[in-house]
Image (cartoon, rainbow, N blue to C red; front, top):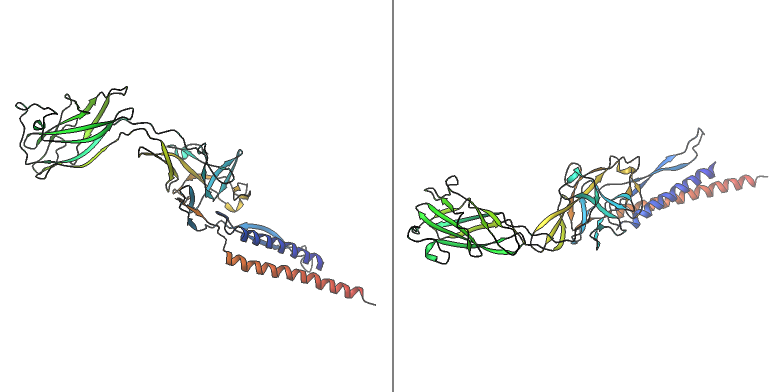
Length: 396
């Protein structure tokens, strides 16, 4: 029986050496999770046991350290969860977020597995699909709303409209003017000029012209209280209408003057924002902590193109290693729970970083020494058994 016991020990020690060696070999593999060997004794009712066996190889899914790479398409998970990939019709899971963008716009790892997620604006209500960054340009958006904040000089005198009719070419027919930008439905930029005329104490007439063409029908009025604050209820902010021509649709936009003031200071533009923009080509992508893929365009606009899906399992240790630093689900792991980064049990995403291996190299080197000694001890057992058997054979 002594030989079989020692042989079982040698076999188990050899597997232990393999596991430790594999951990050491992958100590620099991004997203790698180390493993430990679990041993069990073999006993069938004999007075002495019949040796040992490997009961299982347990994976350690503790988080590795996030290491900055400075590469925008590298992703690390700060917390729980796995990236979900698809390749050849098979779904697999990984902690390795080293991604490249293919010429077709797919985000994939070095082995060609493509990252999956949810379409833009759908969230977890949709089915996960392979994410693809569209190559098309962002379309133009016509200006529909303008928000402006001014200070109007309270010391200027009023202009009598009965005496001095408004004329954009006559600077004496208005008190102050300021220019901004507006866009039509084709993304063509137009110059928007706002004219302010003080018509009475605390009362100002507002007119808007685009490319020098005035909208004479829609004339606004700003009314201020005695403290110089805008009285929104008494003021009117009509919708201004213009026909830009060139095949573009008519422009209709509102101008909101909330928070404007009338004080004894010089005329000043404090802020001016409008929601229109020209068309723009895609110049790059980035990721936020929620896993949204942000498309950045040449027109200085951005939009969400999709959202990375994360998966988690009730028993991650039940996942089956499939090589290339990925795992597949099994009956022991349970079905994947899908969600978004930064919600519930899922960690947040860190762009420009990857998760290094969770292998503690110092500990593995110590374990290697122990495993080697264990192997040597079992070989010594075989040697002793051989000597005992030789002694029995030599009996006269």
